[in-house]
Image 1 (tube, rainbow, N blue to C red):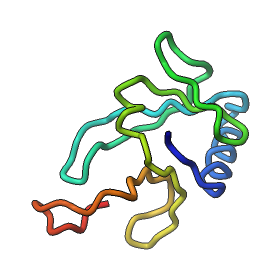
Image 2: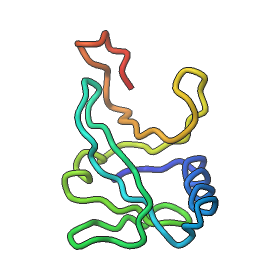
Image 3: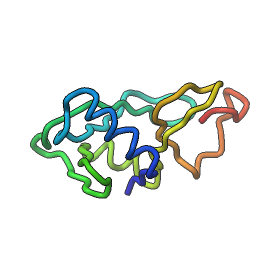
Length: 108
């Protein structure tokens, strides 16, 4: 199961409010694969589509994803970052990933 930090929840709730999307949730989807593992995308979504899982573990909104995304999200953490090197926003991180051979292990 994916975890979400309280700072990430606050960031998403603020985004929902700023974009007049209160009552919506977040769709998480696989956007591709890279040397650092799966890459995810997120978008606003009002309710689950047929076949999607509904994750109610976040405060203030639901998260929706399909089975393939759920498998890749397992044990990942959604966190808010504010870093001069990586920017400000959300990151989905697998704490068990140890880097990759093709880029010297510095991938996130």
